[in-house]
Amino acid sequence: MDEVIRDCRSAYEAFEFHKVYHTLNQFCAVDLSSLYIDITKDRMYCDAADSALRRATQKVMHEIFYALCRLLAPILAFTAEEAWRHSEAGGSVHLEEFPQPQHRDNDASAQVAELLRLRSVIGQAIERARQEKLIGNTLEARVVLNSDSDVTEKIDKEELEEFFIVSDLTIHQAKEASVSVTKTPYKKCARCWRHRPTVGASKAHPDLCDRCESVVIALSGATR
Ligand SMILES: [Zn+2]
Image (cartoon, rainbow, N blue to C red; front, side, top):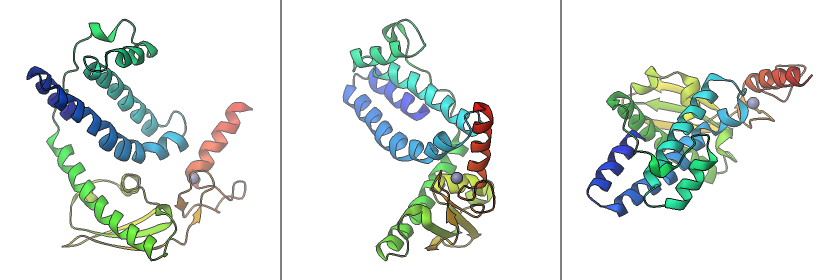
């Protein structure tokens, strides 16, 4: 988002409106729709309403909403205003100033670039396994990633499984990146559709994974 804010501000400065449009369109279609929202869908739909991860994503989407409305306002005048009035911000988006980029975190950008590179290696291996009918869908894959990057040592496995959108991930460090895919032996959770080792462990909820079970128990406690 910070990069988009920077790029749009300098494009407006140079009256290059097509660059603003292109940058925002690309951001919404690629960075948001096919990456960030795809990756965070599971925690938004399946985590407890007050889970820290879910809240963090809501906060990010909130920031993105206000930044996008303001950046779009000169080009999509009515739509941006309508969206702004629909929010709790109050007033008019046309009385706002453009958002300021917050900070540049080069470490985070480098880590994301590494993760995206590994994600594409995993994606290709899963696609091959699908074509060979080894697996039906991505969440059925047991993925063994031989990682040539230290980023996979810095980030914990749960987060990597979420980022790569896979149920069952094992990581080894290696000189060269490669991936092997087989079908996971774990059962599918009826709620989140991920194949997890904890599905079947609970007598009360044999078709749920441990995360979903705790959410369901909390929900049924709240409505009782
Ligand atoms: Zn589940």
